[in-house]
Image (tube, rainbow over all chains, first blue to last red):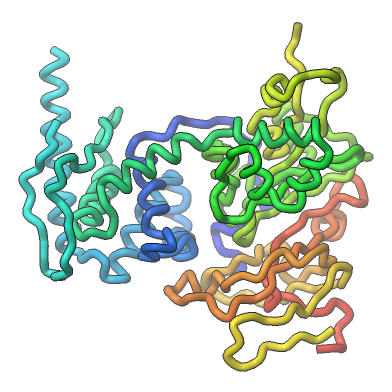
Length: 114
Length: 224
Length: 110
């Protein structure tokens, strides 16, 4: 266990700032919106503090390999499972359905483009 | 594109709620590029939350639309008004959310504080621990604000980092870096540049960019 | 000035005032902490009471973060934080720090 946790980076050496930005993809906007709905005082399903804690606990590897919103949704998924809001099995089944739907839609779009 | 998905609802949690087969279920926008596990996970969680009545499809749609309206021009209007109205500037420093409401800007509920630059004082904001940012006033933070490089270095060598943005702050100027570690958000009120005498608020707001309110840029007059 | 936490009180009377010199505790427990590593064990000056907020260390683990507690804007001189810092001697990093992470800088008093 090191004293300085991976996300706690103020003052560390690092390279030049890459002054870039990107338009958020639809799924990224959805992640952001969902977190705000879940953390809303009238719902309080989870807090931004839990989101942050979940991101910190993904560990340094995930922190370096995942993009910003990939870390967010990973944390949100873990927190919701931890709290029993969703269950592993139903999440897995839903993900299977969605993947099938998305691939089918992509195939349709591909055909339409030809 | 599928709208009326033929999926079964899982009622094992048993609570009574009105959900699911709403006439207009949430239809995510089409993604560019390859399908990733994260996209799938995102949509799966979204659908499960709607099925379980945690939030409605309409809530999600409204939230997405609302977030689209958050952009730096809101902050720029506050700065422009502060530059032209010293009493407003004082109120902005006292309570930025209330001052924003005077201009019809709803900047949310999380406290946002204005950091005024003054002659001999320059401010810049960062969140070294994650990415806290005054989103409600400035819109989404840029990727670089969330980067390892910015978060690590701006607290330690702010002038060097600002030089990478093409912004020079003289060694005589006091430089304050503000790390947003608690539930307070900050934005910088840059100094009004010389050569803007007599400008309208609209003209002034145009030169106040997002980066000016982060503190990595200074307002620039457009070249003629 | 001593403030106290009365048993079961929802809020704490602020212990520090603007101008107080404080030191951030040099503790390094695991867990969710909003006191950055770069100020642990460092001395700074209280600029203002920023807010009285629920504790994120509790909120992060599903608690309600009560009792709420004071958060202070604490300024740290850059020249004291970073070896070889090049800039104005007045340059500072200002951090919002929860009261339970702060002690009086001179030691002695509670």
